Length: 184
Image: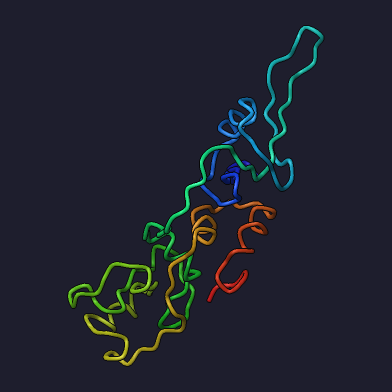
């Protein structure tokens, strides 16, 4: 996959970044890779030596790099692209799937009524449902949510943040999804 990235983990196995092949190659040649998982999915070809042989560096799809392991609370950035992917491009009021340009962010408790702009107070809505709900709560508008909004954990966020995930990367990430591999 041409646009695929390599999943970089810390040495404890926690995702920290999606990196390019070149960044991964730098970690490999600097001997900063502690362990790796998945297929050797990428190759970087180098120059040809005087014997006519070309150097080839095979890179795994998942690698863990050396360095400190920082543990702390993780709150992913609330961006519409990630929100729409979290809600699987469904309007959480009518249940219809839409293309991203026909979706909007709806505040369950409207912002004008002190509702927060947070993962647990926003859902994906089609323009029609968002307009119908207006400046009311779902209960006041007589509209029921078809799913409960949630804050993606670190592993779910890494899924949301990359549109070109390889199968072994997805298998690794989904083991830590809320509900053990399924959305709530």
